[in-house]
Length: 524
Image (tube, rainbow, N blue to C red; front, side):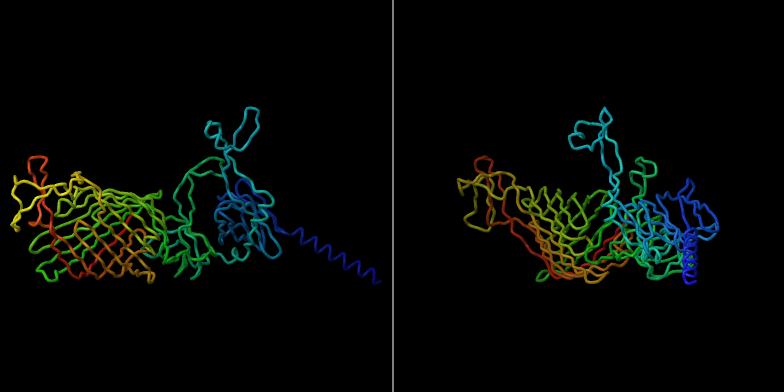
C-alpha cells in the first residue's frame, strides 16, 4: 500500500511539472514582429524595431535589439506596452536569456573588418599592403567567439525591472530639458536618463548590410528627473551636458555626467568675449582703459579658430596713446588640451615696436573648468641698433641732419628688421561652485602695457553650450606706456651719406587700479 501511494504522488508531481513546462510561454521572431505562444494561445505583436532574439518571462517581453539594447514590453492579450530599455553602450545585444530569477544579456562589440577576396574565392583579412595596392575590400561584421560572448554576459534583471519608459527631448531651455514622457509612463523624480544624440552619420547597418545615414546615439549627458507630470518630465542639465530637440532619452543606472572641474565643450559653437577695464591715472592727470574683444568658433572636428583684439590700451591725458594687439589663431582643440599657432599685428606709438606678430597658444584643462591658458607672441620689427650714432655735445637738442657721425661699434651692422619677443598673456581659472569660477589674468607687451587682475566668472544663464551667458568681474591694476622721441640720443647712418637719422624713444607711463567687467556669450 505504501509503495502504491508513493508511486501515485510521484506520478502527480511529474504530470504537474509537465503541465507547467507545457504552459511556459515561448516567442519567436517573425517578419512583422514577435509571435508569443502561451497556454491561452498565440499572439503576434508587430514591432518596428528589428530584434535578433526574444524572451518571455513574468508577463514581460524582452527583445534583443542589437545596438538599441534590450527593449522591455508588458504584454496583455493583444497589446504590448513599452516599459523601458537597457543601453549596452558601444556593444550590441545578441540575445537575452533567463538565468534563475534574473536575466542575462549576451553582447558583442561591433567591428568592421576589411577583407580581400582572391580570384579563387578564398577570403583573408586585409592589411596595409592591400590598401596600398587597391585590392577589393568587403566589409563584414566580426562575430564574437564563445569565450568573448561568455566574458561579456551582463546581468540586467534589476536594471530592466526598475527602468522607466524611453522618450525624446522636446524642448531645451538654458539649464533644463523637457521630455515627452511622464508619470503615466512610470517616470519618477530622481530617475536617470541618458540623452543620446540623433545626429546622422554614415554607419554600417546590421538590418540592410549596407552603409547608411543612421543616428550616432552618442551619449551627450546623463541627467536626473527633477520634476514630473502626466506626459512630461523635466531634467536638469549640469555643466558640460549637451542635448538638442529630438535627442533620445533612455533610462539608465549610470552616474550623472555633470562635472564642474572638467566639463566638456560643445562643438559647432560660436562664442564672443569682451572686457572693459577703465582706470584713472595715479600721479598724472589722465584716464584710460584696457579692452578685449574676441570671437572664436569650434567645429565638428577638433579645431577652434580665435580672432580679434586680445588687448587694446587707451590713454587720455597729456598724451594720447592706443597700443593694441590683433590676432587670428587656429588651434587643435580638445576638451582637455589646446595648442595653436597664429599671426597678428602689434602696434604702439614707437615705430620700432610695431610689426607682424606670430603667436603660440596653449591651454591645459577645460575651457569652463580648471585650466591654464597662455598666449606667447613674437614680433617682426625694425632693428633697434645701428653701427653709428651722433649727438649734440651741448645736450638738450637733437642732432641736426647733415652733421658728421662718429663710429659707435664697428662690429655692429644695421640689419633693418629682426624678430623680438613681444609679450605674453596668461589666464588661470579655478572652479569654486557649479556657477562661479575664480580667475586671474596677466598680460605684458613691449608695445606698451602691463595688466593684472583677479576676480570671478559667474554663469548667469545656460550650462556652457548654446545660450550660455557668463559675466566676469575683476579688480586689478594696469600701466600703459606712451613712447616719445628722446632728445638725448639720435642715431644716423653715415655710410649712406644722406645722414638720415632716427631717434631712441623715452616712455611715459600712465596707470592705476582697475575694476573690469566683461561678457562671454555662446550660440550655435
